[in-house]
Image (cartoon, rainbow, N blue to C red):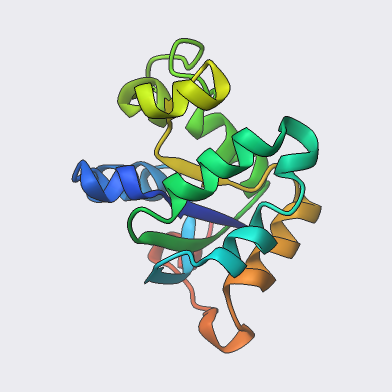
Length: 161
């Protein structure tokens, strides 16, 4: 089974959407094997977004870092068959106007005037998910120690077909 990191960003918590987002992940059959709530300090932010400045510029990195440090985040490790690709489909596009209805971002994200100053597209898109399996492995190891991840069987996994 594949694993991926998912971060419920400060806007998810501030808007009271944690339960609704978690419900969608569980409804999709994804298993939570690790979870914690924490503040994303400057060092963790630099390590997590190590290539953001290179890809999108200093202003995008600065705005993203400020946003991610404005409140706590909930970090999850999810497990499932092809979980990275599944999460990307569940989330939808990073930009609210491009995200399809029925996706998490399509239903809940919005444009943010503060982020707009930096990117011109300013979004508060609720959830981060690893982009590919290599990034997932890096991010899971960055956020979680091995003893914080759990192996267990869900009721669905115990069924025989």
